[in-house]
Length: 188
Ligand SMILES: Nc1nc2c(ncn2[C@@H]2O[C@H](COP(=O)(O)OP(=O)(O)O)[C@@H](O)[C@H]2O)c(=O)[nH]1
Ligand SMILES: [Mg+2]
Image (cartoon, helix red, strand yellow):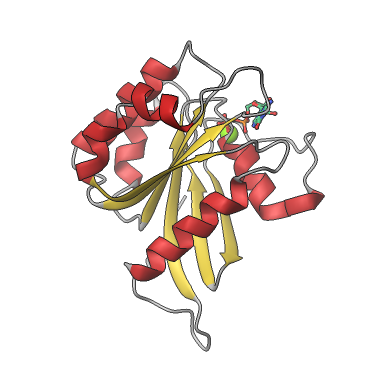
């Protein structure tokens, strides 16, 4: 898939829309596609909306808060963290999705996130971390996610960082996260 070449400060012709490129990553099944569908469809979302094969890119243009976001969901299969590095270079912001109900995979989620940020491919970008699946029993909340992902260590590598608890299936927290992101990107 080709990525649009519009950059940071560009505005859409004839409007005051600012155009931003957002890259969404995270382990397979963390809920990336569901978050994107929920954000796109709002209350029209229903859980049966099929999410894409994780080896495929999923790409949406979504206008929100006077910002036209080109959001690419890069997939999260075993090989995908290699391709994350190829695609974050042009990004204006990163969204990292974690399944907050999965204690089993949170170590891998931390490793992949740190690996990407310390690789210098994704330097000094706003980072929104969605702690998804808050509707499931005993999910990790903000403080626990902060510890498990060792957020203090990656904080200096990001322009700004926010952990947003959400449930994509219930529609809680998704808009709040993107609300923060659009505000931060407009300041950048
Ligand atoms: N309980 C619960 N399940 C979710 C939530 N978000 C996604 N899922 C489910 O998790 C599975 C993986 O979601 P998907 O969006 O395909 O993950 P992706 O591989 O990261 O794109 C699907 O069965 C979703 O219905 C959530 O907020 N709560
Ligand atoms: Mg997906």
